[in-house]
Image (cartoon, rainbow, N blue to C red; front, side, top):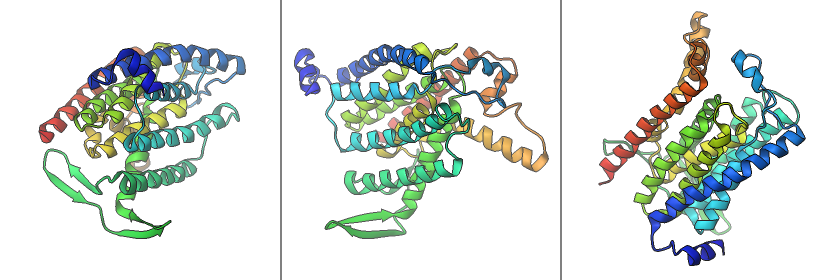
Amino acid sequence: MLVRIFSSIFNIERFPTYQVFITVVLALIVAGVLTPLWIKLSKSRNLGQVIRVDGPQQHLVKHGTPTMGGLVILLSVIISFFTISDIKCFSAIAIFLMFSCGLLGFFDDYLKVIKERSLGIRARTKLICELLIAFAFGLLAVNWVGISINVNLPLTGVVISLSRPSSVINFGGTNVIIPWLYLIFLFLLIAGTTNTVNLTDGLDGLAAGTIAIVMLAYAGIVFRQDHLDLAILCAAVGGACIGFLWYNSHPADIFMGDTGSLGLGGAIAAMAVLTKTELLLILMGGIYVIEGLSVIAQVIWFRCFGKRILKMAPIHHHFEMLGWSETKIMIRFWIVTGILAGAGFSFYFMTAT
């Protein structure tokens, strides 16, 4: 209904690129309107961020800052998407993954903020939940959408088959394929993406800005693949993150919390899977790979040699300890993300043409 009303007023169905552009603007406006309302509500209910004492000491002043802004971002995405586009199978399972991961993040935030458990959900519990979400998403992608079980190696033309071992079960008269190896691969991709995006959300504006850049790059890729509904979804995520940044930039008036970082990380992972650019995500989301590897390297090096290779992990905190301001780190990480996302975007079009 919203799509038909909006189309009849602005006649946007004739111009697909305009639909994508107007979605960015609409999501930006919706997020910009809803975020201050959530900030006001959070302050009235004392829903503030709990700052860990083992982090940078200058972050202790952020204790009590309104959080769980990811709820506003996800709501803005849905309002904008359904205003401009009808839902189809591709966008349906992308939204499923985004909101499933966002719901997991919400429970994590709930334990931290409401129950005042600073570590939130236990790591093992979170991984089990991500495994179940990844398997559900993978089964839908393979059996409902018809996604290939193969994985493409960028720029080489090499295709890696993950079809074996597989099982087939009859569910309600329908044969359901269970490609075990591919599902495990999806779990690693989804868990890796969501958790490294979560690691990146450690400075004001850092995660929101990088997510907007990556998702707008993916909007171009899915538009090239003629999945307009996915392009509009990418545009909605990008626009909502930009609108949220008005209040999340340093010094932040609100944080997105795990609700946002896990949910939006799930959206990025969904685009990589649905566009069959799973391995290209390593480049396009390279800033998240760097953040994740910095933590892994820090832990391994300390356990092996009793020393730290970084002053503090993830790596954005290392630069903080070197005296860089949050704004300098944020902008430089945005620049690096733009270069990597642009390179991945270019590599895709080099192989697609």
